[in-house]
Amino acid sequence: MTGHASAPRRSAEEQVRVDQVLRDIFERQIVFNQVLGLQVLSVRHGDVRAAFDMKPDLVGHPVYGRLHGGVISAALDAIGGLAGMVAIGEHHAHETAEQIQHRFARFGTIDLRVDFLRPGLGQRFEITTEVTRLGGRVVS
Image (cartoon, rainbow, N blue to C red; front, top):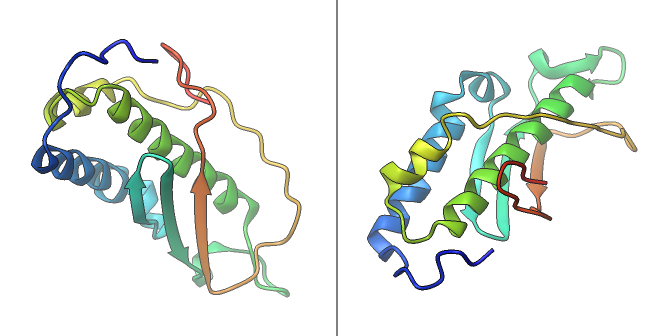
């Protein structure tokens, strides 16, 4: 989508503000992400990553110490949302941080499917994502 190709790209300083807004939304405003312990590693277009540490509250199988499937699903949902926000910010690269933040007012998940291929074992988990399509109303 190149609907705003002729508009000037935001300055480097404004991009830093956009990145800070995204981090703030993800790490502080979405309180459930705090419960999971999610920390943003990167909010760059094409490189959206976060991580969290294992803790007793996230165990789904007490004998094996596996990560709960709901935690895996929630982390994937969260990073997908962040990737969508980054993609929207990139698509509207001429807008300020405040304008971009306003675009997220009605942002939410409409569908999520997770196939659990391996158990979540470890002390630290990194989650990554990729936007495959940015539509007018839906991000995949």
